[in-house]
Amino acid sequence: MSQNKFFAKGGDTVTPENLGEAIQQAIEIEIATIPVYLYTYYSINRSPDQDAISGSLVQKLTAKGKTAKEASAIALDLSAELMVFSNKAGALIMSVAIEEMLHMALSSNLKQALAGLPELVGKSPSVWPTCLPGHVPPFNIDRAKLSQEQLMTFLKIESPDPLHDPKLLQVIEYTTIGKFYEMIVECIDKNDLKYRTFLPQLIEGKGYYAQNNIDTVYYDKEHKPHFTNQDDSGDLVYIKDKASAIKAITCIVEQGEGNKAPGLNPDNSVNCSAVVPGDFDDPSKKELSHFAKFVEIYCTYKTLNAKFKSLDIGVQDINDYFVVNVAKNPLTKHYPANIAPVSDLLNAVYTYIFVMVEDCYLKSGNTQWEIFMFGIHKSMIFILNSICGDIMKLTYTAPDGNVYSAAPTFEDYPFGLLSSPKSQMIDLFNAAVAVYPTISYLGQRIQDLPDVPLHN
Image (cartoon, rainbow, N blue to C red; front, side):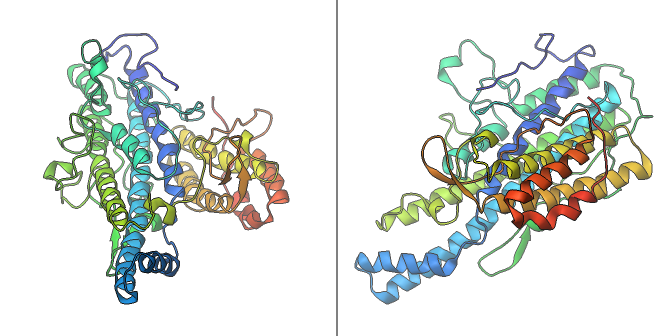
């Protein structure tokens, strides 16, 4: 497990002297969650074959003595619930991932205004399992497929309350992401800081941040669409003074933990009672906080699992019906020669998103807009999403001897300094398409990306 302290210079409070380090740590906390949520998201088949599920259930139920009519009715209802759950779980997880990108940008705006250029490239976790930088007590975070265990990890990440660990009660003071941001707010509030408003930031009103996309919508049992993020739940904030800085941090905390919402139970179990008002993160009370979204997924998962187990038809976990069998914490080096080049390309595209975002803090006006709209949106929404889907059609035998579907590893790609990252991506595409022609349709999309240099 990889663990980092809050501040390289030590100390347990945020001061004007270490404020830059603290905000950079906040940026890296947000970045650390992105590959975790995305990995689990892509493990979900959001549109499983309902006929196949229903047919399988009918066979198992009739074998247990149900009449054909009874079995068909039960199978139809349960398969419909699985269809809705798999789609909704995916939408909710993607909605959180999108807001983590917003939080990264808000934290980056803070650093740009108060301390210096935000560092984004090469900051994804390099060792797995990992942990949140500076979190006390530390806990393992894996890139893993959807399961109740993985959802518990999500809940620990977003918990509004300190995690309960009886072994540490007498010796360690606990920390949550929200409490860390409170330390930053206290420093900003109590000190007369200089705001560097002359430097570029990612600001609202330019269409940079979109609360929803095609991956954040799901359909209920009546086939009615629902978007998981609300328009009033948060946006980019131009940091120009104390009030705007605190506004940005408040958005991060309330979207993640909720507005004074309760966390896990004292025994670290999940409270599956009704959602309370504090769980919402938007004024209209239509969008749940990240923590509450994960509670909803976890509790629905638990209820559905119990329904299937009560039928005594041999179903141990409902994820067998809609979750792809991917390995825990795979690395590109684990993949065979027909997959590794595709993984390298995927990771280069993923890393290039951070390269482009970082460049936006050195560019302003039309140049910044073009990088973001034609680069980041195109990379994140189309190119990366497409490669993630394509690579999962491939299978391999892992070091543990089991056969898995390949999965996006979301590793930082080590771009060299002798040529531009874009030219290196084109070379990686040529190598990948040579072993996997299925992705040939992405060639022109990659050619059309902005040519952005490395800055660190």
